[in-house]
Length: 180
Image 1 (cartoon, rainbow, N blue to C red):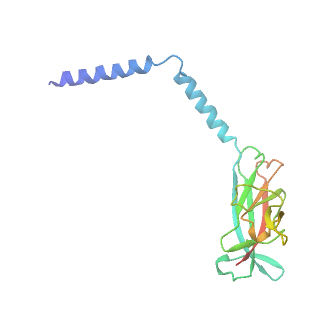
Image 2: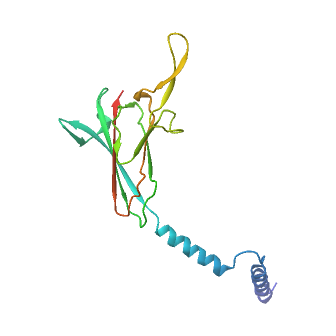
Image 3: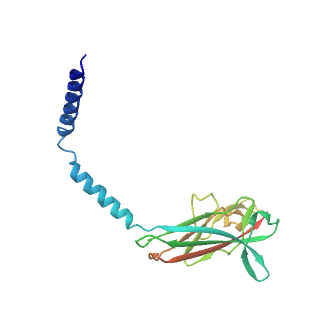
């Protein structure tokens, strides 16, 4: 095979590939339209909310809470978790929801979750949430009834902001746990 025929073959392969590309199905979007849609998607992504969160464990020091090493906490000690967020995006975050799992070897302290949001709880690892989780309890007479779940059985806390979080705005939420 000569050099000319090898180059010739590559030329015909390139022409064939171009022909296939040009003669594609007519019902598909043209390349220019596809590029335009990609540019629109990039612009829309640039206009999305971008809420950055941080979680800080705090230990009680007298009357105040101070960021500290949660790893050295003793059984029975209460820790407070502070969740801080900031919308660093270019658009408002609408219906923003934050779901925080109760850490292992801790139990939720009743009524300790606060934040400028609707607060709900889960006792089934985040599958369902309600303001007052209920459990089925067998009474002394053998009947079963639904009663409020003890706070120690909570597995998750969820905050849902009904107000939009404007670009540049901050959010804060707190909850406490007891070390087991």
